[in-house]
Length: 406
Length: 217
Image (cartoon, rainbow over all chains, first blue to last red; front, side, top):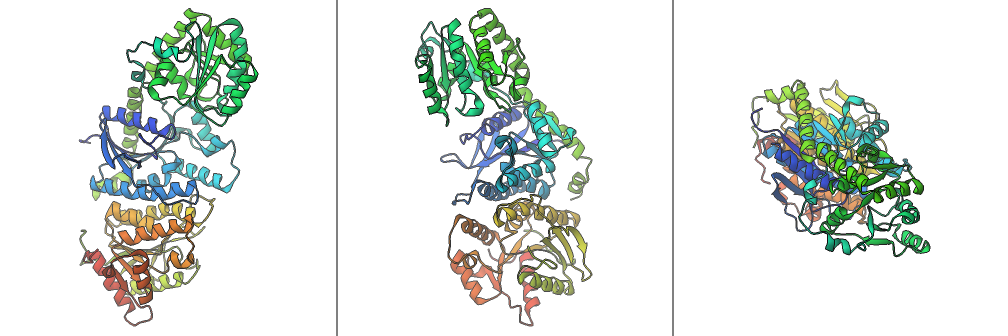
Protein backbone atom coordinates (compact mmCIF):
# COMPACT_ATOMS: atom_id res chain seq x y z
CA UNK A 1 0.00 0.00 0.00
CA UNK A 2 1.66 3.20 -1.12
CA UNK A 3 -0.66 5.67 0.57
CA UNK A 4 -1.12 5.94 4.33
CA UNK A 5 -3.33 3.62 6.33
CA UNK A 6 -6.72 5.27 6.54
CA UNK A 7 -9.49 4.74 9.10
CA UNK A 8 -13.00 6.10 9.53
CA UNK A 9 -14.09 6.50 13.18
CA UNK A 10 -17.81 6.52 13.89
CA UNK A 11 -18.73 8.09 17.23
CA UNK A 12 -21.94 9.70 18.44
CA UNK A 13 -19.90 12.22 20.48
CA UNK A 14 -16.72 14.15 19.78
CA UNK A 15 -15.55 17.45 21.31
CA UNK A 16 -17.12 19.93 21.79
CA UNK A 17 -20.03 17.46 22.14
CA UNK A 18 -19.16 15.63 25.38
CA UNK A 19 -21.71 13.34 26.99
CA UNK A 20 -19.56 10.58 28.44
CA UNK A 21 -16.18 8.94 28.08
CA UNK A 22 -16.39 8.06 24.37
CA UNK A 23 -15.84 11.66 23.27
CA UNK A 24 -12.40 12.19 24.91
CA UNK A 25 -11.42 8.60 24.06
CA UNK A 26 -12.09 9.04 20.33
CA UNK A 27 -10.47 12.49 20.40
CA UNK A 28 -7.17 11.36 21.94
CA UNK A 29 -7.07 8.09 19.99
CA UNK A 30 -7.70 9.84 16.65
CA UNK A 31 -5.21 12.60 17.37
CA UNK A 32 -2.50 10.11 18.39
CA UNK A 33 -3.20 7.88 15.37
CA UNK A 34 -2.82 10.94 13.12
CA UNK A 35 0.52 11.67 14.80
CA UNK A 36 1.53 8.09 13.98
CA UNK A 37 0.87 8.62 10.28
CA UNK A 38 -2.68 7.26 10.07
CA UNK A 39 -5.22 9.24 8.07
CA UNK A 40 -8.26 9.57 10.36
CA UNK A 41 -11.77 10.66 9.43
CA UNK A 42 -14.17 11.10 12.36
CA UNK A 43 -17.90 11.01 11.59
CA UNK A 44 -19.92 12.34 14.51
CA UNK A 45 -23.13 14.17 15.45
CA UNK A 46 -23.47 17.90 14.92
CA UNK A 47 -23.29 20.37 17.81
CA UNK A 48 -24.37 24.02 18.11
CA UNK A 49 -21.69 26.35 16.68
CA UNK A 50 -19.32 23.51 15.75
CA UNK A 51 -18.47 23.45 12.01
CA UNK A 52 -19.71 20.67 9.71
CA UNK A 53 -16.17 19.94 8.64
CA UNK A 54 -12.87 20.87 10.27
CA UNK A 55 -9.36 19.54 10.74
CA UNK A 56 -8.32 19.23 14.40
CA UNK A 57 -4.74 18.18 15.16
CA UNK A 58 -4.49 16.38 11.83
CA UNK A 59 -7.86 14.63 12.22
CA UNK A 60 -10.61 15.33 9.69
CA UNK A 61 -13.89 15.73 11.55
CA UNK A 62 -17.25 15.60 9.79
CA UNK A 63 -20.36 16.47 11.81
CA UNK A 64 -23.49 14.95 10.35
CA UNK A 65 -27.03 16.21 10.52
CA UNK A 66 -28.28 14.15 13.46
CA UNK A 67 -32.02 13.50 13.61
CA UNK A 68 -33.66 16.58 15.13
CA UNK A 69 -37.39 15.92 15.07
CA UNK A 70 -38.88 14.76 18.36
CA UNK A 71 -38.16 11.02 18.71
CA UNK A 72 -40.40 8.32 20.19
CA UNK A 73 -37.53 7.25 22.49
CA UNK A 74 -33.73 7.32 22.75
CA UNK A 75 -33.09 4.06 20.88
CA UNK A 76 -35.30 5.15 17.95
CA UNK A 77 -33.35 8.40 17.81
CA UNK A 78 -30.10 6.41 17.68
CA UNK A 79 -31.30 4.32 14.72
CA UNK A 80 -32.68 7.40 12.92
CA UNK A 81 -29.43 9.31 13.49
CA UNK A 82 -27.57 6.31 12.05
CA UNK A 83 -29.54 6.60 8.79
CA UNK A 84 -28.05 10.06 8.27
CA UNK A 85 -24.62 9.05 9.54
CA UNK A 86 -24.48 6.13 7.13
CA UNK A 87 -25.68 8.24 4.21
CA UNK A 88 -23.12 11.00 4.76
CA UNK A 89 -20.26 8.59 5.50
CA UNK A 90 -21.10 6.64 2.33
CA UNK A 91 -20.95 9.81 0.24
CA UNK A 92 -17.61 10.73 1.83
CA UNK A 93 -15.98 7.34 1.22
CA UNK A 94 -17.29 7.41 -2.36
CA UNK A 95 -15.76 10.86 -2.88
CA UNK A 96 -12.44 9.49 -1.59
CA UNK A 97 -12.61 6.72 -4.24
CA UNK A 98 -13.08 4.16 -1.49
CA UNK A 99 -9.68 4.93 0.02
CA UNK A 100 -10.72 4.16 3.59
CA UNK A 101 -9.20 0.91 4.82
CA UNK A 102 -11.06 0.38 8.09
CA UNK A 103 -14.39 1.35 9.65
CA UNK A 104 -14.11 1.70 13.45
CA UNK A 105 -17.37 1.98 15.42
CA UNK A 106 -17.61 2.99 19.10
CA UNK A 107 -20.49 1.31 20.97
CA UNK A 108 -23.97 0.33 19.72
CA UNK A 109 -24.81 4.01 19.23
CA UNK A 110 -23.23 3.77 15.75
CA UNK A 111 -23.77 0.02 15.18
CA UNK A 112 -26.15 0.14 12.21
CA UNK A 113 -24.13 2.77 10.33
CA UNK A 114 -20.92 0.79 10.86
CA UNK A 115 -22.42 -2.55 9.81
CA UNK A 116 -24.00 -1.06 6.68
CA UNK A 117 -20.78 0.69 5.60
CA UNK A 118 -18.82 -2.52 6.12
CA UNK A 119 -21.01 -4.37 3.62
CA UNK A 120 -21.54 -1.73 0.95
CA UNK A 121 -17.81 -0.97 0.76
CA UNK A 122 -16.58 -4.44 1.81
CA UNK A 123 -14.14 -3.08 4.40
CA UNK A 124 -13.16 -4.62 7.74
CA UNK A 125 -15.13 -3.33 10.74
CA UNK A 126 -13.66 -2.71 14.21
CA UNK A 127 -15.84 -2.22 17.28
CA UNK A 128 -14.75 -0.75 20.58
CA UNK A 129 -17.19 -1.73 23.33
CA UNK A 130 -16.93 0.90 26.07
CA UNK A 131 -19.92 -0.29 28.04
CA UNK A 132 -22.82 -2.71 27.66
CA UNK A 133 -26.55 -2.50 28.28
CA UNK A 134 -26.46 -5.56 30.52
CA UNK A 135 -23.54 -4.07 32.50
CA UNK A 136 -25.18 -0.66 32.86
CA UNK A 137 -28.48 -2.14 34.06
CA UNK A 138 -27.19 -5.26 35.81
CA UNK A 139 -29.77 -7.37 33.96
CA UNK A 140 -32.06 -7.22 30.91
CA UNK A 141 -35.64 -6.57 32.02
CA UNK A 142 -37.60 -5.09 29.08
CA UNK A 143 -37.90 -5.48 25.29
CA UNK A 144 -36.30 -2.05 24.98
CA UNK A 145 -33.20 -3.17 26.89
CA UNK A 146 -33.09 -6.49 25.06
CA UNK A 147 -33.23 -4.72 21.69
CA UNK A 148 -30.16 -2.67 22.64
CA UNK A 149 -28.42 -5.75 24.02
CA UNK A 150 -29.05 -7.62 20.74
CA UNK A 151 -27.85 -4.64 18.70
CA UNK A 152 -24.60 -4.72 20.69
CA UNK A 153 -24.33 -8.48 20.08
CA UNK A 154 -24.90 -7.91 16.34
CA UNK A 155 -22.15 -5.26 16.24
CA UNK A 156 -19.65 -7.58 17.92
CA UNK A 157 -20.71 -10.39 15.53
CA UNK A 158 -20.11 -8.22 12.46
CA UNK A 159 -16.82 -6.79 13.74
CA UNK A 160 -13.52 -8.32 12.64
CA UNK A 161 -12.04 -7.44 16.03
CA UNK A 162 -13.63 -6.18 19.23
CA UNK A 163 -11.55 -3.85 21.39
CA UNK A 164 -12.12 -3.37 25.13
CA UNK A 165 -10.19 -1.07 27.46
CA UNK A 166 -9.62 -3.50 30.34
CA UNK A 167 -9.32 -7.27 30.90
CA UNK A 168 -12.38 -6.94 33.09
CA UNK A 169 -14.39 -5.64 30.09
CA UNK A 170 -12.92 -8.35 27.84
CA UNK A 171 -14.30 -11.10 30.06
CA UNK A 172 -17.57 -9.22 30.56
CA UNK A 173 -18.08 -8.78 26.79
CA UNK A 174 -17.08 -12.37 26.11
CA UNK A 175 -19.65 -13.53 28.63
CA UNK A 176 -22.38 -11.13 27.50
CA UNK A 177 -22.16 -11.96 23.76
CA UNK A 178 -20.48 -15.37 23.67
CA UNK A 179 -17.55 -14.25 21.52
CA UNK A 180 -14.52 -16.36 20.59
CA UNK A 181 -11.43 -15.36 22.59
CA UNK A 182 -9.30 -14.52 19.55
CA UNK A 183 -11.80 -11.90 18.41
CA UNK A 184 -11.21 -9.77 21.51
CA UNK A 185 -8.30 -7.40 22.00
CA UNK A 186 -7.44 -5.45 25.13
CA UNK A 187 -6.06 -1.99 24.43
CA UNK A 188 -6.20 0.23 27.52
CA UNK A 189 -7.68 3.67 27.72
CA UNK A 190 -5.04 6.39 27.85
CA UNK A 191 -4.38 9.50 29.82
CA UNK A 192 -2.70 12.65 28.61
CA UNK A 193 0.03 13.59 31.12
CA UNK A 194 0.60 16.95 29.36
CA UNK A 195 -2.58 18.40 30.84
CA UNK A 196 -0.98 18.20 34.31
CA UNK A 197 2.32 19.90 33.47
CA UNK A 198 1.57 23.64 33.66
CA UNK A 199 4.00 25.66 35.81
CA UNK A 200 1.50 27.18 38.17
CA UNK A 201 2.08 27.84 41.86
CA UNK A 202 -0.42 25.53 43.56
CA UNK A 203 -0.57 27.36 46.93
CA UNK A 204 -3.26 29.78 45.74
CA UNK A 205 -5.58 27.20 44.16
CA UNK A 206 -5.08 24.88 47.16
CA UNK A 207 -6.29 27.52 49.60
CA UNK A 208 -9.71 27.54 47.92
CA UNK A 209 -10.30 23.97 49.07
CA UNK A 210 -8.42 23.38 52.34
CA UNK A 211 -6.50 25.01 55.17
CA UNK A 212 -2.69 24.89 54.76
CA UNK A 213 -2.37 22.38 57.64
CA UNK A 214 -5.05 20.04 56.21
CA UNK A 215 -4.21 17.18 53.86
CA UNK A 216 -6.54 16.92 50.85
CA UNK A 217 -8.36 13.63 50.23
CA UNK A 218 -10.00 13.98 46.81
CA UNK A 219 -12.96 12.24 45.20
CA UNK A 220 -13.86 12.98 41.57
CA UNK A 221 -16.92 11.42 39.93
CA UNK A 222 -20.65 11.34 39.60
CA UNK A 223 -22.40 11.27 42.97
CA UNK A 224 -24.19 7.99 42.34
CA UNK A 225 -24.41 4.82 44.38
CA UNK A 226 -21.96 2.67 42.33
CA UNK A 227 -19.20 5.27 42.76
CA UNK A 228 -19.21 4.61 46.52
CA UNK A 229 -18.88 8.20 47.80
CA UNK A 230 -20.89 7.24 50.89
CA UNK A 231 -18.14 4.76 51.79
CA UNK A 232 -15.53 7.51 51.76
CA UNK A 233 -17.70 9.70 53.99
CA UNK A 234 -18.19 6.81 56.41
CA UNK A 235 -14.43 6.28 56.44
CA UNK A 236 -13.74 9.95 57.28
CA UNK A 237 -14.06 9.81 61.13
CA UNK A 238 -11.51 6.97 61.32
CA UNK A 239 -9.08 8.91 59.15
CA UNK A 240 -9.55 12.09 61.18
CA UNK A 241 -8.58 10.30 64.38
CA UNK A 242 -5.06 10.01 62.96
CA UNK A 243 -4.58 12.88 60.47
CA UNK A 244 -5.93 16.36 59.92
CA UNK A 245 -7.56 16.18 56.50
CA UNK A 246 -10.17 17.79 54.25
CA UNK A 247 -12.36 15.57 52.10
CA UNK A 248 -13.05 17.32 48.79
CA UNK A 249 -15.90 15.81 46.71
CA UNK A 250 -16.09 16.95 43.08
CA UNK A 251 -19.10 16.18 40.89
CA UNK A 252 -22.88 16.07 40.82
CA UNK A 253 -25.46 13.32 40.93
CA UNK A 254 -28.73 12.12 42.33
CA UNK A 255 -27.14 11.29 45.72
CA UNK A 256 -25.90 14.82 46.41
CA UNK A 257 -28.61 15.82 48.90
CA UNK A 258 -28.47 12.49 50.67
CA UNK A 259 -24.68 12.66 50.99
CA UNK A 260 -24.59 16.20 52.31
CA UNK A 261 -27.19 15.42 54.98
CA UNK A 262 -25.16 12.34 55.91
CA UNK A 263 -22.14 14.62 56.38
CA UNK A 264 -24.14 17.10 58.50
CA UNK A 265 -25.55 14.31 60.63
CA UNK A 266 -22.05 13.03 61.31
CA UNK A 267 -20.94 16.53 62.37
CA UNK A 268 -18.36 16.65 59.60
CA UNK A 269 -19.61 19.67 57.62
CA UNK A 270 -16.32 21.52 58.26
CA UNK A 271 -14.26 18.55 57.01
CA UNK A 272 -16.14 17.57 53.84
CA UNK A 273 -16.47 20.01 50.94
CA UNK A 274 -18.86 19.44 48.04
CA UNK A 275 -17.63 21.56 45.13
CA UNK A 276 -20.16 20.47 42.50
CA UNK A 277 -18.96 20.47 38.89
CA UNK A 278 -15.52 22.11 38.36
CA UNK A 279 -14.08 23.50 35.14
CA UNK A 280 -11.17 21.58 33.59
CA UNK A 281 -8.37 23.95 34.65
CA UNK A 282 -9.48 24.11 38.30
CA UNK A 283 -9.99 20.34 38.43
CA UNK A 284 -6.52 19.60 36.98
CA UNK A 285 -4.92 21.87 39.60
CA UNK A 286 -6.91 20.30 42.40
CA UNK A 287 -5.89 16.82 41.25
CA UNK A 288 -2.24 17.93 41.46
CA UNK A 289 -2.80 19.35 44.98
CA UNK A 290 -4.48 16.23 46.30
CA UNK A 291 -2.46 14.37 48.95
CA UNK A 292 -4.54 11.31 48.16
CA UNK A 293 -7.10 10.54 45.44
CA UNK A 294 -9.74 8.04 46.45
CA UNK A 295 -11.75 5.86 44.03
CA UNK A 296 -14.09 3.81 46.26
CA UNK A 297 -16.29 2.42 43.41
CA UNK A 298 -18.55 -0.60 43.82
CA UNK A 299 -18.67 -1.08 39.99
CA UNK A 300 -16.05 0.29 37.57
CA UNK A 301 -15.49 -0.97 33.98
CA UNK A 302 -12.27 1.01 33.58
CA UNK A 303 -11.64 3.78 36.13
CA UNK A 304 -10.15 6.65 34.13
CA UNK A 305 -10.23 8.91 37.21
CA UNK A 306 -7.58 6.74 38.91
CA UNK A 307 -5.35 7.07 35.84
CA UNK A 308 -5.79 10.84 35.85
CA UNK A 309 -4.76 11.00 39.49
CA UNK A 310 -1.68 8.92 38.73
CA UNK A 311 -0.82 11.24 35.83
CA UNK A 312 -1.29 14.21 38.20
CA UNK A 313 1.20 12.56 40.62
CA UNK A 314 -1.41 12.18 43.32
CA UNK A 315 -1.21 8.88 45.28
CA UNK A 316 -4.32 6.71 44.73
CA UNK A 317 -6.42 4.56 47.05
CA UNK A 318 -8.91 2.41 45.13
CA UNK A 319 -11.39 -0.37 45.79
CA UNK A 320 -10.18 -3.68 44.38
CA UNK A 321 -12.77 -4.10 41.61
CA UNK A 322 -13.24 -4.06 37.80
CA UNK A 323 -10.75 -2.00 35.82
CA UNK A 324 -9.29 -0.47 39.00
CA UNK A 325 -7.86 -3.86 40.00
CA UNK A 326 -5.81 -3.84 36.79
CA UNK A 327 -4.66 -0.23 36.85
CA UNK A 328 -3.32 -0.28 40.41
CA UNK A 329 -0.70 -2.68 41.81
CA UNK A 330 -0.99 -2.77 45.57
CA UNK A 331 1.87 -1.11 47.48
CA UNK A 332 3.60 -0.23 44.23
CA UNK A 333 1.45 2.18 42.20
CA UNK A 334 -1.32 2.71 44.77
CA UNK A 335 -3.27 1.17 47.60
CA UNK A 336 -6.03 -1.39 47.04
CA UNK A 337 -8.77 -1.71 49.63
CA UNK A 338 -11.67 -4.13 50.08
CA UNK A 339 -14.78 -3.31 48.08
CA UNK A 340 -17.67 -1.84 50.07
CA UNK A 341 -15.63 -1.43 53.28
CA UNK A 342 -15.23 1.98 55.02
CA UNK A 343 -12.78 0.37 57.50
CA UNK A 344 -10.49 -0.83 54.74
CA UNK A 345 -10.77 2.50 52.92
CA UNK A 346 -9.93 4.44 56.11
CA UNK A 347 -6.89 2.23 56.63
CA UNK A 348 -5.64 2.93 53.07
CA UNK A 349 -6.22 6.67 53.20
CA UNK A 350 -4.60 6.99 56.64
CA UNK A 351 -1.60 5.00 55.54
CA UNK A 352 -0.93 7.32 52.57
CA UNK A 353 -1.62 10.54 54.50
CA UNK A 354 0.53 9.68 57.51
CA UNK A 355 3.66 8.55 55.66
CA UNK A 356 5.12 11.05 53.16
CA UNK A 357 7.89 8.67 52.13
CA UNK A 358 5.35 5.98 51.24
CA UNK A 359 3.15 8.51 49.41
CA UNK A 360 6.10 9.69 47.32
CA UNK A 361 7.06 6.11 46.49
CA UNK A 362 3.53 5.50 45.15
CA UNK A 363 3.51 8.77 43.19
CA UNK A 364 6.80 8.04 41.44
CA UNK A 365 5.93 4.45 40.54
CA UNK A 366 2.41 5.36 39.42
CA UNK A 367 3.59 8.15 37.14
CA UNK A 368 6.18 5.87 35.56
CA UNK A 369 3.49 3.23 35.02
CA UNK A 370 1.21 5.76 33.33
CA UNK A 371 3.98 6.81 30.97
CA UNK A 372 4.84 3.19 30.19
CA UNK A 373 1.39 1.73 29.69
CA UNK A 374 -1.26 4.41 29.37
CA UNK A 375 0.45 6.86 27.06
CA UNK A 376 -1.85 7.72 24.12
CA UNK A 377 1.03 7.54 21.70
CA UNK A 378 1.71 3.92 22.66
CA UNK A 379 -1.99 3.07 22.63
CA UNK A 380 -2.27 4.54 19.13
CA UNK A 381 0.72 2.47 18.04
CA UNK A 382 -0.91 -0.68 19.44
CA UNK A 383 -4.16 0.19 17.67
CA UNK A 384 -2.31 0.82 14.41
CA UNK A 385 -0.53 -2.55 14.70
CA UNK A 386 -3.92 -4.23 15.17
CA UNK A 387 -5.31 -2.43 12.11
CA UNK A 388 -2.34 -3.61 10.05
CA UNK A 389 -2.65 -7.20 11.26
CA UNK A 390 -6.32 -7.25 10.25
CA UNK A 391 -5.59 -5.65 6.88
CA UNK A 392 -3.07 -8.38 6.28
CA UNK A 393 -5.72 -11.05 6.97
CA UNK A 394 -8.23 -9.07 4.89
CA UNK A 395 -5.87 -8.88 1.89
CA UNK A 396 -6.21 -12.66 1.53
CA UNK A 397 -10.03 -12.61 1.67
CA UNK A 398 -12.29 -12.68 -1.38
CA UNK A 399 -13.56 -9.22 -0.44
CA UNK A 400 -10.11 -7.80 -1.14
CA UNK A 401 -10.00 -9.72 -4.44
CA UNK A 402 -13.30 -8.20 -5.65
CA UNK A 403 -11.88 -4.74 -5.06
CA UNK A 404 -8.81 -5.52 -7.10
CA UNK A 405 -10.75 -6.76 -10.13
CA UNK A 406 -13.23 -3.88 -10.10
CA UNK B 1 -23.11 9.40 -14.31
CA UNK B 2 -22.65 5.68 -14.68
CA UNK B 3 -22.57 4.08 -18.10
CA UNK B 4 -25.68 2.27 -19.28
CA UNK B 5 -24.88 -1.12 -20.71
CA UNK B 6 -26.73 -0.93 -24.01
CA UNK B 7 -25.55 -4.29 -25.27
CA UNK B 8 -26.17 -6.22 -22.08
CA UNK B 9 -29.44 -6.98 -20.33
CA UNK B 10 -30.84 -4.39 -17.98
CA UNK B 11 -30.38 -5.47 -14.35
CA UNK B 12 -32.80 -4.26 -11.69
CA UNK B 13 -33.00 -4.89 -7.95
CA UNK B 14 -36.46 -4.48 -6.42
CA UNK B 15 -36.85 -3.78 -2.68
CA UNK B 16 -40.18 -4.70 -1.15
CA UNK B 17 -40.97 -5.66 2.42
CA UNK B 18 -43.62 -8.12 1.20
CA UNK B 19 -43.33 -10.70 -1.59
CA UNK B 20 -45.04 -14.09 -1.93
CA UNK B 21 -45.25 -16.28 0.09
CA UNK B 22 -45.27 -13.41 2.59
CA UNK B 23 -48.38 -11.38 1.79
CA UNK B 24 -49.34 -8.48 4.04
CA UNK B 25 -51.36 -6.27 1.72
CA UNK B 26 -51.70 -5.79 -2.03
CA UNK B 27 -48.07 -4.94 -2.61
CA UNK B 28 -46.80 -8.55 -2.61
CA UNK B 29 -48.94 -9.63 -5.57
CA UNK B 30 -48.23 -6.44 -7.48
CA UNK B 31 -44.45 -6.80 -7.14
CA UNK B 32 -44.70 -10.47 -8.10
CA UNK B 33 -46.63 -9.56 -11.28
CA UNK B 34 -44.12 -6.81 -12.03
CA UNK B 35 -41.13 -9.12 -11.58
CA UNK B 36 -42.72 -11.74 -13.89
CA UNK B 37 -43.39 -9.18 -16.61
CA UNK B 38 -39.89 -7.73 -16.35
CA UNK B 39 -38.34 -11.18 -16.77
CA UNK B 40 -40.50 -11.69 -19.87
CA UNK B 41 -39.16 -8.36 -21.15
CA UNK B 42 -35.57 -9.64 -20.88
CA UNK B 43 -34.77 -7.69 -17.69
CA UNK B 44 -32.67 -9.48 -15.09
CA UNK B 45 -34.64 -9.11 -11.84
CA UNK B 46 -33.55 -9.51 -8.22
CA UNK B 47 -36.16 -9.11 -5.52
CA UNK B 48 -34.84 -8.34 -2.03
CA UNK B 49 -37.48 -8.94 0.60
CA UNK B 50 -38.08 -9.95 4.20
CA UNK B 51 -38.95 -13.35 5.55
CA UNK B 52 -38.56 -14.54 9.09
CA UNK B 53 -37.06 -17.95 8.30
CA UNK B 54 -36.98 -18.59 4.50
CA UNK B 55 -33.76 -16.62 4.23
CA UNK B 56 -31.09 -16.62 1.54
CA UNK B 57 -31.01 -16.43 -2.23
CA UNK B 58 -33.14 -18.49 -4.61
CA UNK B 59 -33.52 -18.75 -8.40
CA UNK B 60 -37.28 -18.99 -8.76
CA UNK B 61 -38.74 -21.10 -11.59
CA UNK B 62 -40.22 -17.96 -13.20
CA UNK B 63 -36.70 -16.53 -13.69
CA UNK B 64 -36.82 -14.06 -10.79
CA UNK B 65 -33.89 -14.18 -8.37
CA UNK B 66 -35.20 -13.68 -4.84
CA UNK B 67 -33.13 -12.89 -1.77
CA UNK B 68 -34.85 -12.97 1.60
CA UNK B 69 -33.34 -11.45 4.73
CA UNK B 70 -34.38 -11.54 8.34
CA UNK B 71 -33.67 -9.19 11.23
CA UNK B 72 -30.48 -9.87 13.22
CA UNK B 73 -32.06 -8.01 16.14
CA UNK B 74 -34.88 -10.30 17.26
CA UNK B 75 -36.49 -8.12 19.92
CA UNK B 76 -38.12 -4.83 19.00
CA UNK B 77 -40.31 -2.14 20.50
CA UNK B 78 -42.15 -1.36 17.25
CA UNK B 79 -42.12 -1.37 13.47
CA UNK B 80 -39.80 1.66 13.28
CA UNK B 81 -36.83 0.13 15.11
CA UNK B 82 -37.55 -3.19 13.36
CA UNK B 83 -37.30 -1.55 9.94
CA UNK B 84 -34.21 0.49 10.80
CA UNK B 85 -32.18 -2.58 11.82
CA UNK B 86 -33.44 -4.67 8.88
CA UNK B 87 -32.02 -2.16 6.38
CA UNK B 88 -28.40 -3.22 6.96
CA UNK B 89 -29.26 -6.75 5.87
CA UNK B 90 -30.91 -5.34 2.73
CA UNK B 91 -27.73 -3.34 2.09
CA UNK B 92 -25.60 -6.42 2.62
CA UNK B 93 -27.41 -8.61 0.08
CA UNK B 94 -27.87 -5.80 -2.46
CA UNK B 95 -24.14 -5.00 -2.21
CA UNK B 96 -23.43 -8.70 -2.76
CA UNK B 97 -25.46 -8.57 -5.98
CA UNK B 98 -23.55 -5.46 -7.04
CA UNK B 99 -20.13 -7.03 -6.42
CA UNK B 100 -21.10 -10.41 -7.88
CA UNK B 101 -22.11 -8.85 -11.22
CA UNK B 102 -19.04 -6.64 -11.44
CA UNK B 103 -20.84 -3.48 -10.41
CA UNK B 104 -23.40 -3.61 -13.19
CA UNK B 105 -26.69 -3.01 -11.36
CA UNK B 106 -28.60 -0.46 -13.42
CA UNK B 107 -31.08 0.66 -10.82
CA UNK B 108 -33.01 -0.13 -7.66
CA UNK B 109 -36.81 0.10 -7.55
CA UNK B 110 -37.85 0.54 -3.93
CA UNK B 111 -41.44 0.10 -2.75
CA UNK B 112 -42.62 2.35 0.07
CA UNK B 113 -40.59 3.68 2.99
CA UNK B 114 -39.26 0.53 4.65
CA UNK B 115 -36.05 0.08 2.65
CA UNK B 116 -35.46 3.73 1.72
CA UNK B 117 -32.39 4.02 4.06
CA UNK B 118 -30.76 1.10 2.22
CA UNK B 119 -31.57 2.55 -1.22
CA UNK B 120 -30.13 5.95 -0.22
CA UNK B 121 -26.91 4.46 1.19
CA UNK B 122 -26.38 2.24 -1.87
CA UNK B 123 -26.93 5.27 -4.08
CA UNK B 124 -24.40 7.39 -2.15
CA UNK B 125 -21.86 4.58 -1.84
CA UNK B 126 -22.05 2.79 -5.19
CA UNK B 127 -23.78 5.34 -7.47
CA UNK B 128 -26.73 3.03 -8.13
CA UNK B 129 -29.74 5.24 -8.97
CA UNK B 130 -33.12 4.37 -7.51
CA UNK B 131 -36.80 4.85 -8.23
CA UNK B 132 -39.08 5.34 -5.24
CA UNK B 133 -42.39 3.65 -6.08
CA UNK B 134 -44.96 5.19 -3.77
CA UNK B 135 -47.75 2.78 -2.85
CA UNK B 136 -49.04 4.72 0.14
CA UNK B 137 -48.08 7.65 2.35
CA UNK B 138 -47.71 7.91 6.13
CA UNK B 139 -49.88 11.03 5.99
CA UNK B 140 -52.81 8.82 4.90
CA UNK B 141 -51.94 5.82 7.07
CA UNK B 142 -51.65 7.91 10.23
CA UNK B 143 -54.94 9.79 9.65
CA UNK B 144 -53.52 13.16 10.54
CA UNK B 145 -51.84 12.22 13.81
CA UNK B 146 -48.34 13.61 14.04
CA UNK B 147 -46.65 11.78 16.87
CA UNK B 148 -42.84 11.45 16.92
CA UNK B 149 -43.37 7.94 15.50
CA UNK B 150 -45.35 9.22 12.48
CA UNK B 151 -42.88 12.07 11.98
CA UNK B 152 -39.99 9.61 11.87
CA UNK B 153 -41.65 7.62 9.08
CA UNK B 154 -42.49 10.84 7.23
CA UNK B 155 -38.89 11.97 7.50
CA UNK B 156 -37.81 8.69 5.87
CA UNK B 157 -40.39 9.19 3.10
CA UNK B 158 -39.08 12.72 2.60
CA UNK B 159 -35.48 11.48 2.42
CA UNK B 160 -36.54 8.85 -0.11
CA UNK B 161 -38.23 11.42 -2.33
CA UNK B 162 -35.39 13.93 -2.06
CA UNK B 163 -32.67 11.47 -3.05
CA UNK B 164 -34.63 9.44 -5.65
CA UNK B 165 -34.01 9.80 -9.38
CA UNK B 166 -37.72 9.35 -10.01
CA UNK B 167 -40.98 8.78 -8.15
CA UNK B 168 -43.47 6.29 -9.60
CA UNK B 169 -47.11 6.53 -8.60
CA UNK B 170 -50.13 4.60 -9.78
CA UNK B 171 -52.67 7.42 -10.11
CA UNK B 172 -53.10 11.09 -10.74
CA UNK B 173 -54.56 11.37 -7.24
CA UNK B 174 -51.41 9.91 -5.67
CA UNK B 175 -49.25 12.20 -7.77
CA UNK B 176 -51.15 15.20 -6.40
CA UNK B 177 -50.82 13.87 -2.85
CA UNK B 178 -47.06 13.41 -3.24
CA UNK B 179 -46.69 16.93 -4.63
CA UNK B 180 -48.90 18.37 -1.90
CA UNK B 181 -47.30 16.53 0.99
CA UNK B 182 -43.61 16.65 0.08
CA UNK B 183 -43.43 19.52 -2.45
CA UNK B 184 -41.41 17.52 -4.97
CA UNK B 185 -41.08 18.93 -8.50
CA UNK B 186 -43.80 17.54 -10.77
CA UNK B 187 -41.37 16.42 -13.47
CA UNK B 188 -39.73 14.04 -11.00
CA UNK B 189 -42.92 11.99 -10.82
CA UNK B 190 -44.30 9.47 -13.33
CA UNK B 191 -47.77 7.93 -13.36
CA UNK B 192 -47.98 4.30 -14.41
CA UNK B 193 -51.30 2.52 -14.81
CA UNK B 194 -51.20 -1.14 -13.74
CA UNK B 195 -54.56 -1.75 -15.43
CA UNK B 196 -53.55 -0.49 -18.86
CA UNK B 197 -52.06 -2.59 -21.68
CA UNK B 198 -49.01 -0.30 -21.79
CA UNK B 199 -48.22 -0.72 -18.09
CA UNK B 200 -44.99 -2.71 -18.38
CA UNK B 201 -43.89 -0.58 -21.33
CA UNK B 202 -44.28 2.54 -19.15
CA UNK B 203 -42.28 0.91 -16.36
CA UNK B 204 -39.52 -0.08 -18.78
CA UNK B 205 -39.34 3.45 -20.16
CA UNK B 206 -38.98 4.80 -16.63
CA UNK B 207 -36.28 2.26 -15.83
CA UNK B 208 -34.37 3.08 -19.00
CA UNK B 209 -34.38 6.81 -18.44
CA UNK B 210 -33.23 6.41 -14.80
CA UNK B 211 -30.53 3.90 -15.78
CA UNK B 212 -29.30 6.27 -18.51
CA UNK B 213 -29.40 9.18 -16.10
CA UNK B 214 -31.61 11.25 -18.40
CA UNK B 215 -34.21 12.22 -15.81
CA UNK B 216 -34.04 15.78 -14.56
CA UNK B 217 -33.70 15.81 -10.78
